[in-house]
Amino acid sequence: MIQRKSREETWPKAGRAFPVSVKGVTRGWYDRVDTVSWGPTYLGAFPDRGSTCNGVIFQVSHGELKAFAEREQGYKLTRIPAGDITMLDGRSAPPPGIFWYFGSTSRRYVSREFPIVQSYVDVCVSGCLEVEDEFPASRAAKFTQNFFTSTTDWKTPWINDRIYPWRPFVHVPQANKIDTLIRDELGDEMFRSISLPGAGI
Image (tube, rainbow, N blue to C red):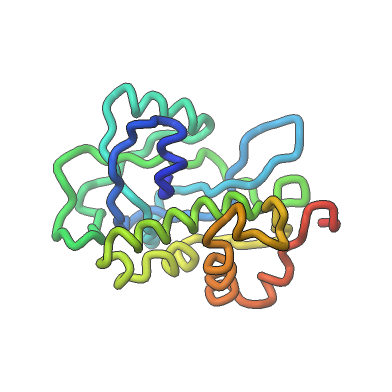
């Protein structure tokens, strides 16, 4: 939900989101939606006192929370102590409130039937780049790079499912920047192992 468009697809009036770092949560590629068809592996998260990950917080009403819970079926609402949140927008403390994230209920890792897909990576990383554009303090904290380093289990198969991938900027304006980040943060070998649909996985 880092990307504004993704939030607004669930709730068109979703408010402004603020970048944070959260202690006690680990995030990785190990969640999926049960389906009779093939599908992607999604990001999941679990409590882990030895881990830290970044993300965004935004205010919701009870109705909005219900709408997001319906979207995130298969995950469970998990409380975040306010003291575990570090603001990355220049503020010294989070605003008053009760904080939650959608946690995973099991770990099911990337597989041939459930690969990482580039369209989902693009949503996540585009959201991080949006955050850096809006909040200089998050850019100074290397928010986008930290998304890569605080996310575990980057694995193949990883499918490039962008439309017209030889001109990806037509559909994903920041495709070149995202691809550069993948190379820089995960290595050239991982980037070259991302396959195209129909190319075999």
